[in-house]
Length: 304
Image (cartoon, rainbow, N blue to C red; front, side, top):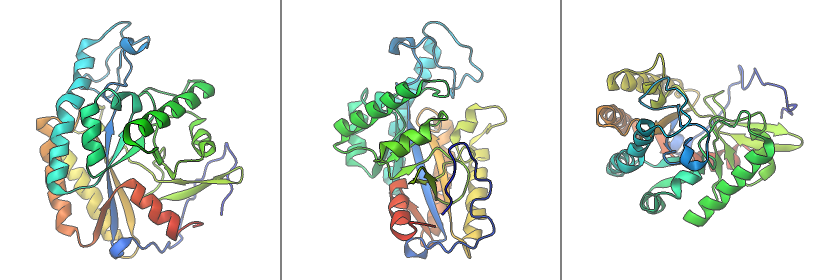
């Protein structure tokens, strides 16, 4: 057990240790797919924000506008109006369990989507109250937003979220998650291919790392994916490498998706190809939700 000081960093992790991990059915790899639902909670003057959104849209390096940017707004609207439904159809056809990183403000604006999520093979993890950068937000405001998110998701779905992911987090986020006390896992980390425990002030928090490389966000960032074939190849290579390692040392693979990005017709084919490829290995791959990983880890590896 490593007790980290609040401002310290763990550069070692599991290191050279041969961690004996056993996934359900002795799978070589735990594959977890996240769908981010953010549309309707991005920066927008209609929400009281000073500027329109500039991040993760088809307009790369968009400039801040003090007013409504209707182009950006409509790009985000595509995600909730069309992208989500295209993805939902695919996941349902392939019987793929999904974790939704849901921004509470966005979810409450689309009751039809919420109904489908509630009745489908989805887990709702909180992605915050608003989809904004919390780096310079006051701790008290961030805490209030976290509470708003929990309360709203519980009201919509009948139960509180057990997973957390801010994304553009602050130096205070991890402490707020730990002190809130109700989250089984936190995913604001990209530091490993396995879950791990973080200890602070005699408390511990399970961390299930996420991925920004196995992520469709690279379609709309510099040095990213230009075509669906590039995305498919990258996901396949990641899967193949981790599957091979899984012969002796099982790992976890996360894939990050966004309704407005991979939900476009020219991109979703790459996701279909990847899912078809993965399903050929389903006897040795545990395709699951993040909450499933959390519960498995808590039960079997409470102090690793």
